[in-house]
Image (cartoon, rainbow, N blue to C red; front, side):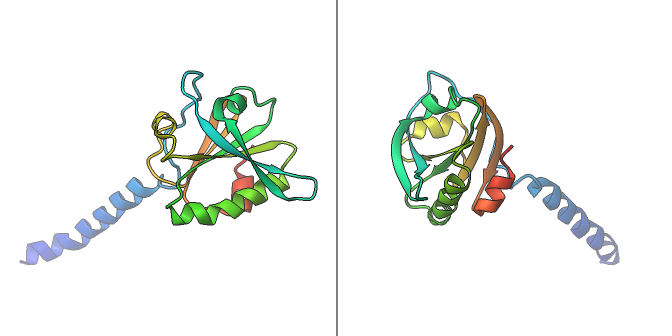
Length: 154
């Protein structure tokens, strides 16, 4: 018994270290995957008008990802039943309002577009992906404020 007590604090410390190392990357959604022309689907673009009002326009994802004209594209992979996704929606509208000249904000419903979700290796939602010049540059999972999202945009 004395021997077990002697090693127990070391075992707990080791387990805590393993847990800390294994969860350190959990803020990042997943592997960065570039768009492919063959894998496309519908998305909704959040467009800020001159009065700041947001309108939703149906678009094809690859039309914007592969021909972004130097703009950064923020894609939110979400679902209607997801509480954090619904909380994120007004934050993404703020991003679209604050950066209309150089950022395009898109939303992709993973339930309606499982092929897109599979291609981009979306394993949890909300999952925000950032693209620039047709290449994936960043991946962030979970709820984030508009300011946090804007800070991650190159």
